[in-house]
Amino acid sequence: MATSPPSRIVSTTLWMKVCAKTTPSWPTIFVTETPVAMFCGEIIFPVLLVLGLGTRFAASGLLFMTCIVELTVPDGWPIHLTWFAMALGIAAWGPGAVSIDYLLGDKSFRS
Image (cartoon, rainbow, N blue to C red; front, side, top):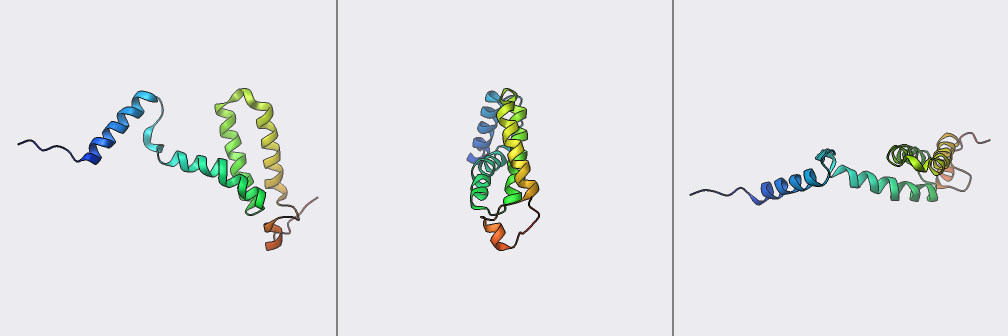
C-alpha cells in the first residue's frame, strides 16, 4: 500500500511550481520576506514620518526604498530624485520642532 505525502509537502511543492512558472528568474526564497518589507516601506515609514516618531530611521528606510524603486523603474528618475533629496534631508537634519522625536529629546543640529 503506497502512502501519500503530507498535504503540506504537496502544497509547498505546488506553490514552488507556480512560482517557477510565473517568475522563472526570481528566487522563491524571499516569498515571505518581501510582503513584510513592502508593508514597512510603503505604509509604516510614511506614517512614522508624519507622526515624527523615529524620523531618521523612517527617512533612511524610505531612502533605501527609493534606491530600490529607481533600480526597478528607471524612467521615473525625476520623481525618485525628489524623493531621495527629501528623505536625505530628513535623515541628515532630523525632525522639526513639531514632532514626537523633538518632544522626546532629539534636539539635534538644525540650520
